[in-house]
Amino acid sequence: MDNVYIEDLRKKVKKALAVDKNRYRHTLGVADTAACLAMRYGIDVQRAYVAGLLHDCAKCVPDSKKISECEAYGLAISSYERISPYLLHAKLGAEYAKRIYGINDPEICSAIAYHTTGKPAMTRLEEIIFLADYIEPRRNQASDLPKVRKMAFVDIRRAIYTVTADTLDYLNSMGKPIDPMTEQTYRYYAGLYEKSGKDQES
Ligand code: DGI
Ligand code: FE
Ligand code: FE
Image 1 (cartoon, rainbow, N blue to C red):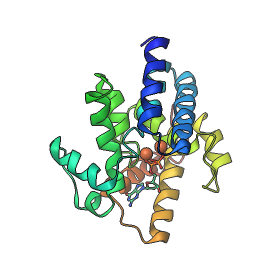
Image 2: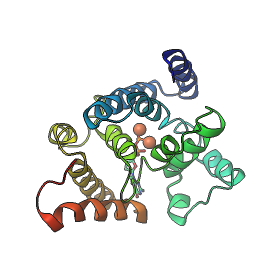
Image 3: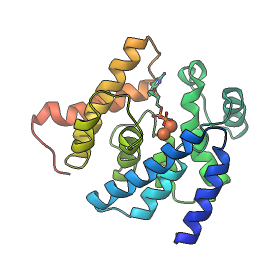
């Protein structure tokens, strides 16, 4: 993964997201933020950058095509994903990463696949992409962003606990169906802190 390879990926992703300029800008923000978090937590910076660059690569695919492509690739579609097909951009994006962008690093693909719902006991790279998506500089919706942004660089798992709690509150307040994986992610990360009541090693 040298800079020429990454520049080429950047151009391809820009094309894939061309219908929505803000989505490409968000993507660059996630890639940069993921790289910073990788520096903080001592993992490979370029892998984190590439995972950030590709995390929403299937976002601009129309929902009906998300469903048909997942079916064509043999990816299971849950009842929750049928109701909220936008959730599929994560697992379809992971498949695109492999098939279209030639990524053969399973952890990068898995970070893309779980970036929306998270999952219990994520790897550090998965945690970084999950959180970078929420805190990148262009995000401005969530009320606790300043707190979470700081916390991300202090204790990433506690930040995920906060973010997943807020996401569940938001989804409940909007009456949106909640994917069991989103709930499980929250329970796992809440459990890390509610058991011990103090900071975990990070
Ligand atoms: O693709 P992005 O917009 O950058 O971010 P994302 O992939 O994290 O998607 C964010 C949206 O997904 C946000 O509005 C919360 C929503 N979401 C997360 N978990 C669930 C969910 N929506 C539903 N319906 N169910 C979930 O479990
Ligand atoms: Fe996304
Ligand atoms: Fe995103």
